[in-house]
Image 1 (cartoon, rainbow, N blue to C red):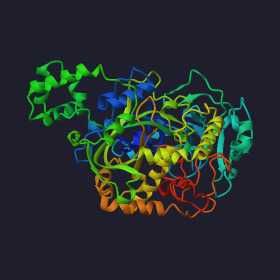
Image 2: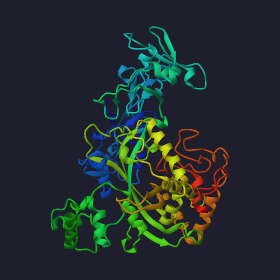
Image 3: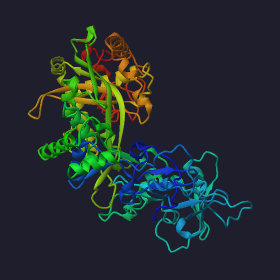
Image 4: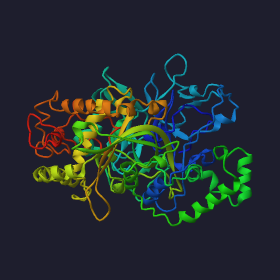
Length: 615
């Protein structure tokens, strides 16, 4: 598959969208085209800005291999405030795409054919790239040549492969020598698969599209061809799974596998923090003269009060210590150490913490409340899945088990990355209170573990691996309850608030962790308005905690919600939780709305013996 190289930008996406919504391997709807974002080999690496975050880079290397050299932001042209002309060089900067699916449909005569047939003609408009389209020049219907649309049926598998629907094989119920000429007919107005028929005009065969779904689809659909259209090849390992029919634009056609880290300072010294922040530029300096040159070309404006000699000395000091750093890929432990022990001397431009007292009524449950007035989150895309969401499991270490599709044909040398600024509230739970509470609920612990084991067994994963324990259910449920309450007053939508759960009993790996960070990390100014931090002040926070917990006592879906069992009623990974009380948007939850139960927080109509806040 050759990328659509019109050398002009057709649509605009935010850098964060190129990771979370329309990343490599995802299908994007342009004004008149349906295209797929191509693999990293086709990205213009020279137009990508390097992002410094060593802890995240170490975690990415742990997943993708030691050959990963850097984290790069998607290519973005500098804005001049003017509308670029067709010959402006900035219009050539962007992410390459290729038409997908390759089968197109004429809406007038209903002709269904692939691009390779030569029946459709590409019309390019250098002055209005949003008008680029394919037309059916030889359409039998009168009038102007119609703009063709993509066929809305595709096939995919859980190995991350995606392919055009096998139209010819499907209508002929297998391989055929027929020189097929197909039309896609709709006999009703609903658009349902039962009302859509594919017909071969050569041999007069016709089949409804409903036969491509369900049990009938599993019986007649062929095996996957292991096609990887974003890499323009077929997987050399092959694929033994059966094709699964999906619709174009289906939500399960692409799920990103993301690693994220919060930037935390390593040094109290301001110069060392600046060196860390600008390391992608400074790491190439070989001597003090290079530092002087960087200053002359305007790359060292934040270092105005420091001499070239001081900067060079700091660079050498960082290089000397870089090789001694332990890069184990652990993202949360260093963050816990900084947030649970806030130090004002570490505050900088992208990191400002301010501890406050917990509300009086909650001091038995919380050890510390920390207001993160400024924070920075860095996210990297390391792959994607289809059909099965990584949020079902949530553990990045299981990326290989999740059948993660690669971003490039060879081993990746860099990872697409974006960084966003925001604010947040960190709540540290009392370890003694959590331990004392969990010791009383051994039976509930066993119930959640059994649900966890059965859930993983059904998916062919190691049953006992990755169980987060009941303390995680407590922290996770609390985070969702508070998130929903704060969104009512802070000015942010629920989808703009994210959670970060720090949960671990005391082990040989390190000290116990029991805390929740709720923060904003939006790509625009919405993430830094200050509305979230203001609600964490002692005079406000107690009231919000009371309202959040009070709202959980009775759910609109009770008694069904309160009586839901983690595994007895159905194979789920949550207890008393539903969309009316605890579930959060996909962008907010780190575990795909799993491991939730409001009965561990407050008394419900079904359980009164497991409430943490009423012990």
